[in-house]
Length: 233
Image (tube, rainbow, N blue to C red; front, side, top):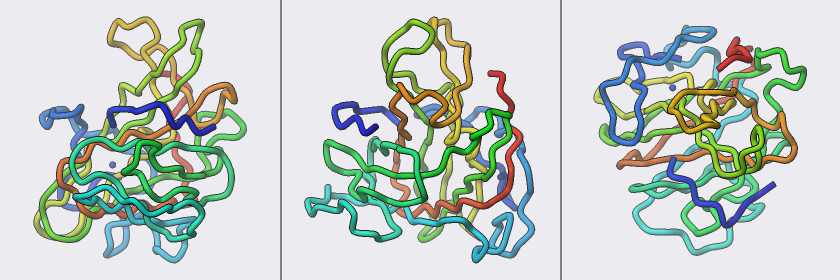
């Protein structure tokens, strides 16, 4: 499922401030739709961190990594501190297969089918907690490559979300809709024509696009909290 030649240009509301929905440089768009389970813990997360299905740190680095990080089993992934990083996806138990997102192949992350019964409600949610020194932001979206309704190409979702590290307590953003589905504009008119959940179509390659502008640490949590996203665009 990994597409090493494809390069792609790449959110629960916070306790103190809403996550911004943005394309690459847009910081004025409306806040994302609230999904299930607002934060209820001092961490801002929707559950006790010990109940998470999986967690890893996304670490932005100034210089590309050169070491082979395939199958090294660390719960961290390295991405470019500035610019885009491709995170290729494949179905299976949660695992970081290739932690180096800074090389030409991008990273490779394995995660379960979020909606195996095609109900429009996922079996888990994805939440990003930004930590560390204040400053920096990143835009996240999902993309598919292959043939969709007769049109072949790479389609990045119209649902893009921005996470940032502001001063004060770390913020938590529900990014489930943006990272577990791709809202595809097939005919190029700027509107979403079809919502594709991860791994619904085995003929497609799936990836996350991470467009970074100085965000050094983002913690990704996967909680067993169903997310009612819906099947429609």
